[in-house]
Image 1 (cartoon, rainbow, N blue to C red):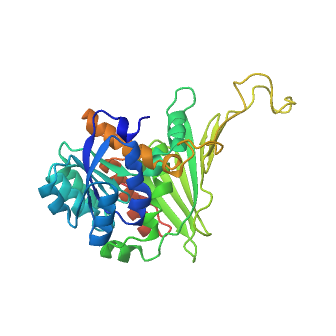
Image 2: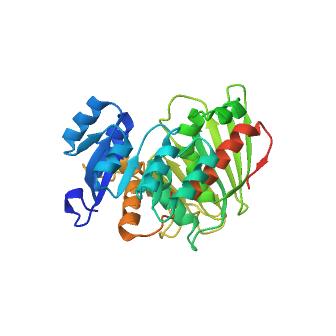
Image 3: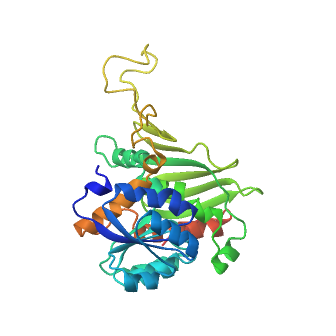
Length: 344
């Protein structure tokens, strides 16, 4: 990879929303992207001015003012999901390419509105979990002719699905089920493909399971675990002759042993075409591969957006179409209460 100062061709960008998450995760990653930060946009004037000074750019309190005064090609938007749709549409109508943080909206119909305004602009949604190296390895193996044959997938993540789903949808609220539930949900959908049916079963504490039936016949289970903020996230992907497990940054592919069960006497037989393969980030050196921005997929999602803009190609990952499918699953889970809901 290259650092920002090494790229010959750069995108002129504006950053909309420089609160805690934006300042902690999005702005620092500009050091690794082919971009020139021309402006930051934030409602709080003092925060905006200080940050603009730090990044040697201009500050504006509204996106429209930034669009009128700055020559920018694209924007990175990171604000409340309730106002993501209006800001995305405003940017698209001004001819800007858009990277927008997840969740992109609070209702599926809002995503449809964004699609209607997109035209030939690049739009990528920051579903970091589908861009993290562990997920990319899982997707690679599922789609590989050498492995393939996905049968089921599992995600384990501390989460609840609220019981007042219809009220949440009517008000356009953004519960934790939307703000963070999209992380494991996006992984399952990226691995399994289009979802055809959704069933949510929860106890009084609103923990339980979300069952996903994929159009390809595979099955997905999202275990809505109880507990504190996640310290350990787990995923598992199952096929006919292999299993892939993910725990934090550790990825383990189990391929089985050649031979007859009950006759094999060694768990490490000769050769390397059976047994387990393990990939894991190392913390012994100050590299990039072990930093959260890279292991969690944030860098890859933003770099993918930049590549699409620079190469003038249509995004195929983190798309608005993927977001629309996810919002349909999100809404169905809120309304399920044990009943199976079909996804059109």
